[in-house]
Amino acid sequence: ATERLVVESALRRGRTDVLQMLLSTLSESSRRVALLKSLASEKRLQDCLAVFRACEPKSSCLYNAVVDACMDVENAKLAESIVAEAVAAKLADTVTYNTMIKAHLKRDDLPRARATLASMREAGFQPNSVTFNEFLNAATRDRVETMWALLDEMKACGCQPNHVTCSIVLKSVSKTSRAGEVEKALAVIESMGEPMDEVLLSSVCEACIRSGRTDLLHQQLQLQKGPRSVAVKGAQTFGSLIRAYGALNDVDGVWDTWREMRRRHVAPTSVTIGCTVEALSANGQVDAAYELIQEQMRDPRARPMINAIVFCSVLKGYSHRKRFDRVWRVYEEMKSHGVQFSVVTYNTLVDACARSCDMGRIPALLEEMAAQNLEPNIITYSAIVKGYCQENRVDRAFDLLEDMKKMKGFRPDEVTYNTLIDGCARYGMWGKGMSVLAEMQDAGVSPSAFTLSVLVKLANRSKRPEEGFELVESLCAKYRIRMTVHVYANLILAASMMGDLDKAIGVMEQMLRAKVRPDSRSYVLLLRCAVATKAPQDAAGILRAAGGLGGAHPRLSVFPQGAL
Image (cartoon, rainbow, N blue to C red; front, side, top):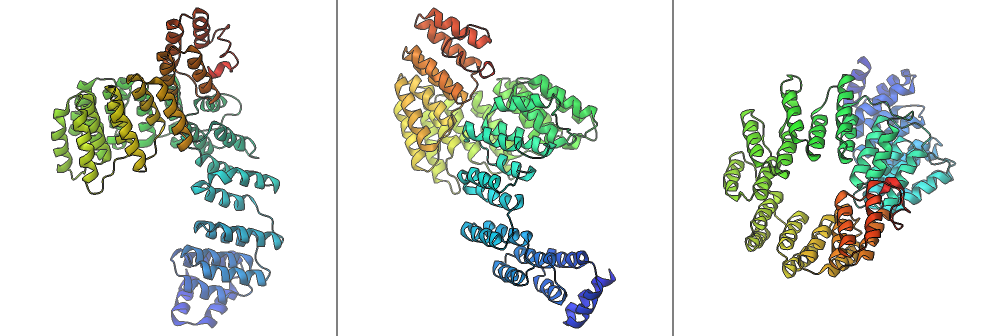
């Protein structure tokens, strides 16, 4: 403390001699570095430079601390001049170059980052995992396709991936990732020279959930039951595991994980409770989810963590199961408990009105929102559009779309357009549905897998199943959409409507090759197609494949049993 007071006084008075005298007494380099970092944390770059200039002799650590200080205030030009000094003094090291690479990449200046890497090698320093992690992190922002080449380069340099590398790679996994890319990401983890920790386990689960790779998710959870299991101590990881079991429709797994967390005396967070309530609600256990909320509400320590987000899962669960009386009972209970509503809460309630064709409640809900200074958003209006479509008031839905386009700050999004296409599909309005798709693309809104699903539904309801296949093929090629089980199932129905069993089985083969696991609806639709086309042998083979029995259909038996 005394040293810092003297430094501050010397800096205020411009007494470089006093600074030099004091710093010469600090024999430990770490104390000088700590002083520089302290000044840098306060954004006092000039004072940091003054202290640095007064330090003699200088070291690599001192140079690196000042370079960091420059980058903290985004003064790249000064940082480069300090690095040049370090190089001239032969005090630049791997950390020095890595810091500059990070700075260049932060400004999306890949050429200069690469040039710094080249200079690093010329100076006799080999890039390490930190170097490559900086390049990988930048690649995930907008150059994901270069990530695999970077990993190959990393391997060629003899650098093994570490936990940070794996986390960066997993961060790149999204719902549009190709099946092979997800497997390659997990292979990077397998090649890591150190055991997985619980943070990485959580990242793996979340990546598999995002990409819809339930087969890989199942494998990871199975590993947790064997000798390679990761010790889990944090509520966040327990939350990810609960989400994972929910994604696999494994309610027993959800409960086992929750009970294990409680047995280990790990205090649940609001997120963990929310994950559990959502996993139960999404799997039809809405009453159990509601009871869990009640149990937490009775615990004084947990009660503050029960917020509108947690309740929303139950509201949504009851709404999706058409138990609308329970929706409004829970809504009243939330108000009685003084739960702070959000726009999401009201959007869930508006959606319930749409699902129940009870649009008369919406004006009162909008008034409540206004009273709480909550502005309706695009999701609110999309839900109202959905309600009009449900009530066969499609023209009114299109009128609202036009109104939305005139509103300041509002721009119809993918959900809005998908809702309108679905409304057109409900009533076989092919022309209008196609006009919505055209407007969607003209507005720069990219179709998704859900869009494909409703488009095939539109084609089927409009008795144009062949055009459903054409739409899927063209849009997948244009937007790199990864098809989901719902798209495949609707295509199987399209092939069935065409009376083409061979094509329907071909869709199932395509689904399995894409590592999308068929659901019960897919098998039922395929089975009905076989029955309708009077193909008893095919029907028997399909039924055996669905039940995991021997003698499965020859075109399906070539796939692993776990994929069927």
